Length: 237
Image 1 (tube, rainbow, N blue to C red):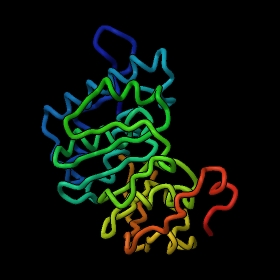
Image 2: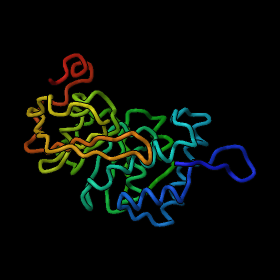
Image 3: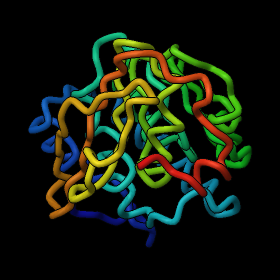
Image 4: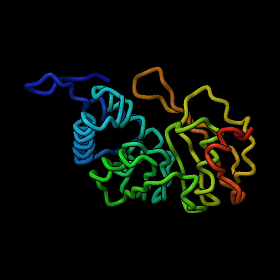
């Protein structure tokens, strides 16, 4: 994706609207112009806040690719009107772009960092709920149609953190990278079963995001998720 300069300044403008809409069309996304305005306003607010809050290390000129496009790669895997949980959302990825582009979704953005969520709360959307909690201590179970998160931990830990919140009949779809081994973890105690893996190319780069799709086939055993220290010391194998 190309970049351009802001008129009359030296800061790079993160958005090339023509390139973004070309990608959206190829991906089957219908993004109205007013949604582009909202996405660009979010980007502006993020990097203004980032000057003092250290919310992201992604350079502003790369944000539309590495934050916004990356967040939307999962969009086609989400059913209409799904209730979606994004674990480890940080300043709002993928939760905020998904809620912005898909108003039919009900998205919950969860993170343990009050600083990150403090920014996100300044960018409200009618279909976005923000929760400040550690998911293993949150206590919500069997509630969401889809649970996701951008590689927030090693795969075994991410699945353990995600499974309990997903309802039976729903799916856990972690956002990972191509090349990981997704079938070597025993996820049966979590009530999960690997159905298939989808891959999506990140813009015009050579980077491919992998989406292993785990179906929730039965309730997660009550002892999961364990405390963070325990699951980290003894991950599922």
